[in-house]
Length: 488
Image (cartoon, rainbow, N blue to C red; front, top):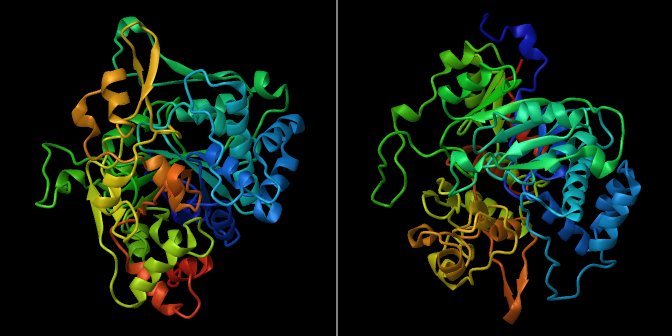
C-alpha cells in the first residue's frame, strides 16, 4: 500500500478542520464562516435536540431555525417540532425551558423526529448560501441519539462526519445504511449484561420515520483517534474503514483519552501522560488514508510541522471557540479574551473526576463557573438532560439508565450504582448548555452555571486577542488568516 499523501491528493483536502466543540459552541454560524473560506467548518452534533428546542423557546432570534424548518423535506414533521417548542417573543423572564424527553434505546417517535430535525437544521444553516464543505462532530459515547442525528445531518447534505470519544467502528456502515434509507441498528454498551443477554442496540428506520425518498449522498467519515491500535483496527476492515483520521493528542480540549498504563497523577491530581501516549505517525501514514493532527497544533508552526509529517493539515478548536461566531456565551468569551489581553491567561487543568464518563476533561479556571469547587458543592444535583446516562440491566432483566452526576440517592439506592462513582462528578449536560447561553432556570431563582473547556495551549487565542484587542471578539476568518499566513 502506497503511503498517503502525495501533494496533488492532499491539495484537494481541507488544510484546517475547525473542531466540533462542546454543546452549541461549534455553532452553524462558526462552521459557515470557516466553510466560506474554503476550509472544513464543523458543527457540534452533541445534544442538538435540546439546543434547537431551547432556541425555539427563546423566540428563535433572527428566524434562523424556522427558516431551516421550512426547508425540511417532510413539512408535517417540522411543523410538529415548531408547534411543540416555538414561543413567539421567547420565554417570560425567569421562565424555565420546557424539557426534552431523555433518550432511551426505544425513544418515542416525537424524540426521534426532534433529533432528526434539529441535526438537519444545524447542518442546513451551516451550508446555506455557499458551496463550501461542512462537517458534523459526534461523540461515540453518546450512543442512543446517533442514528437519528446522523439521519438529520444526511438529509441536509453534510459533507463530513467526524466521530470520537470512543470506538467509531460501526459508524461508516451506519452512515451508508442511513444514506440508502435502510433500517439501521447501532450496538449500545449496557452495564451489567453478559453474552447470554444478547446485543442491545438502538434502531432507526428512516422510511418509518419520514416515508420513502431518494438515496442521500454519503459523506466522508473521519475517525478521531488517539492510538495506533485503534486506527489500524478500523482501517483493516472494509466495514469499519473511515475516509481518514484526526489524530488527537491529550492537550486537546474537552474529553481526553486516559493515559496508557498504570494510573499516575500530579500532586494536583491531574493525569500524567507519557511517551506511550504519543501517537507515532509512521504507522498512521502507512495506512494510506489522509489524516489531520489535533491538540496543540493551532499555530502556524503547528500547521507547518503537521504538513511536514505528512498530514493533510490540522484540526483546531480553542482558537475558534473564542471567535465572534462561536456559540460560547458572549460574557464568558469576553472575560477570557480580556484576561489574555492583560497578560493574565486563565489556567487550564485536566480533571479526572468531573465528567460522568470517567474520562479526563479539560477545564478553564474562570470565576463564576463550575471550575470553582464551592459552586459545584452548592449546585443541586439534577439530571434532566441525560445525554451521558448509561444503560444498565436491572435485576429483573429490564433496562434502566443512570448517570454518576445525578442525585446520589437515585444513582446508588434506586439504581445500584457504586457510591465512589459519584465523587466529584458534575452534570456536564447542564453546564455545557449554560456555557452556550442556554442555561436552565431552577426554582428559587437558581440558574445552572457554566463550565468552559479548552485545550492546554492558548498561544493562538492570546495572539489573536492582542492583535484585535480593539475589536473583540476576533472573527473566525482572523483565525484562518493566522493559521494559513505561511501557506503557499
